[in-house]
Image (tube, rainbow, N blue to C red; front, top):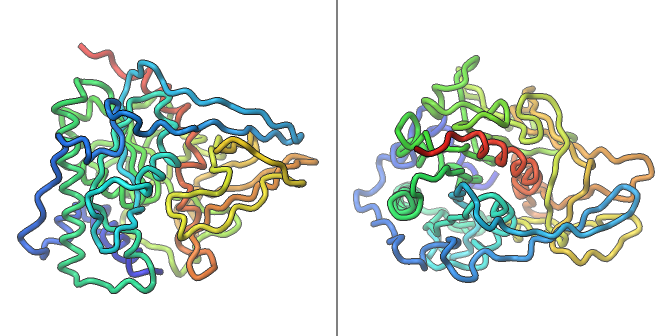
Length: 396
């Protein structure tokens, strides 16, 4: 496990179990925490509805049928969406140091394209740039900084997201329903944002749901609230609003080793299956990169052939109806969303995906399918969110 992963996991434990934010968990940080970025400056946004040309990628998908038939599903963003999406991307920055330099790059655009741009079919998309802890710092040869420097980096990232949210609420929201999405480090940022500005506060009434895969959301054993959040429970059906969807995707045949599982006394990790919020197994509606692009190319294995025999696929994304399923499990391997491939008889689709987190040529055993947590279930999430948005109370 990398030093970066250990750092984030230790902060996650503090956040989830003790109810602390990054700045609480790193209270010994230097007093001169950075001033947040100015979010009135459009250069500090990756996506905004009024940012010309931003987040307008080709998201058409090749639909691969078990019979070998292939057809193209075109993508169109919504013309007049009723809700907003506020997304905080995961660890992707390729800046050379610990903290990302304040310039939007292809790394941030790629995260949007792979994880949430498809949600623009139902919401206006707001994505602030923030000075995150970088992907560069995850590499084995990166010189580990002091604990004070690490703490300041966490506080800098957190302050940026709070400032971006405050600007969005003051200048853009206008009382609209809002969906919060964060993955990995981005989920940690959103958790802090919710605790600071939404949880058990007036703005909770505008929350459609919070989607937080790739991180740790905790509840006391036998309860739905009182752990990470005071008043925001896990989503249990797709008409419920003001709730959280959280999971960590792992290949069913390759769960986390038992000696690597984190245990928190009195707390239980939340797993909500986007394909079956009420429990049990469900069929996934993934949208995966045709060429195997993920949020962090440096940690991604090459994409195997999608079909046998191989075929040429022209669309940038692939989806395979009925091929993948998911089920939340709670066993000696922890709490996780188990991903299975379920081919039909004479299925020409291989089911092979390039989602494992690779370190030194092998899958990192604790990270599962972290790189495609959102790709795997984005079609299901769109279905859920459409119904949740419809269930939101009308604004007075």
